[in-house]
Length: 260
Image (tube, rainbow, N blue to C red; front, side, top):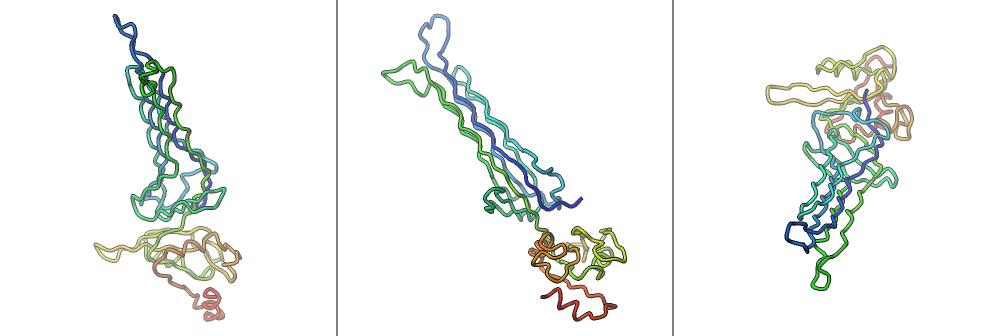
């Protein structure tokens, strides 16, 4: 199933707590403070994976959490840092804050990364609080809290050529003829309800990506028909190919209707 919008919940890792501890060793009755620092919490990162072309791997309201940092130990042992959580998305994914609608990032290049939530810093152990006046501090820092956000992911397909036209104009037929894509083809309008991608090989070194955009009708920009749901998929295409049904009663009017 083609999914191009989804809302998810994400959070980074919490920083580990620093430790309050004193050195214990035979014949050393008054060992000094040796509480270790807590580990840093993991970051939450989005990364572009070029082999993906849909957001179908995500479930609505799915929650992603990076790993928390571990607490500090005795003998000045620092806690283990939490692992970063990397979430892979297809090229063309825009990431918005779901509450404020602020655009946080637009990921278009393979391997491009965006850190959305930074992990909390680990707390300091009591070894850091010893002074000449207080050589046995009984205090340690808590780790910093995690960051949490509700995100809206929106996919805008990236293609070299976009096929547009009225419903049932032959866009899916052309895509199937030029590429190995196998979209649903039938003799009624709105057979295509979701964008289809295909790759056409020009020669041994050159390929182009074609996108079959579901049929547009007059007023699509105002939300008519499939409206805004798929108009965004033509924003990133380098070339638009406008297909007109030659057997239509008025092909020129059909052409003008989409352009308007």
